[in-house]
Image 1 (cartoon, rainbow, N blue to C red):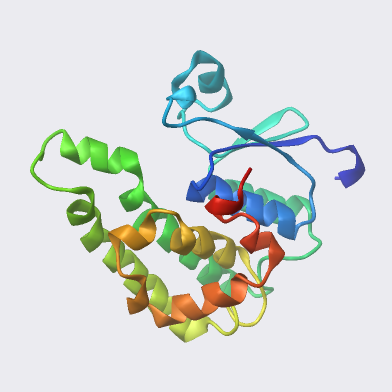
Image 2: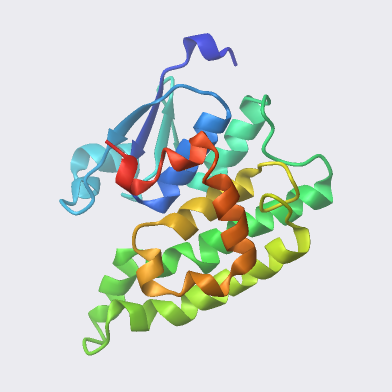
Length: 213
C-alpha cells in the first residue's frame, strides 16, 4: 500500500498501554497518523458513536482509509505485513514465535491485571482489598515470565539487538503511569535494561504519558 495516500487515525487514551503500543509501531514504521483521544474516565468509549467504531468499547482502534482494526496484536501483524519497511519481526519462524510469545505474555499475563476495569470488577465482590493487593500477584507472575524470556533471548532490546514488536509491547507495560505503584519493577533487571535502552529512542520516549499533549 502506498503511504502517500493514507489517512490513519488512532483512537487512543493518554498513558493507556494498549494504544501506546500501536502508536510506537506506527512511528517505527514511519507512518503519519492522527491521534483521537477517547476519554475513558468520562466513559466516552461506551457512547453509541464509539460503540459503532469498536463493539468491545475499548482502545485502541486503528482506522486506515476508513477500515477499522481492533486489538493491538492484530494491528501489529497487519502493520508488519502491509508496511514491510523497518521490519519489526525477525526472519525465522522460530524467532517470530518467540517474539510473539513475549507480546502475548504482556497481553494476557500483565496487561489485564493493571487495567482499572479488572480492579473495579473484583472490588464489586471483595470490597476490603485495595488495587495493589489484587493486582500485584498476577503482575509479578507476568513480569517474572517476561523477564525470563528476555534474559534468554534479549540483547540491547527484548529480542536480540534489533527493535521488534516485543519492545513495543514491553515498553508501555513497564513505563505505564500506574505500574510502578502496583509492583516493584526493580525485581526485573533484564526488562529494566531493555527499557532504559528504549528510553533513548524517540519513537518510545515521546509517548511517555507525561509528555503527551
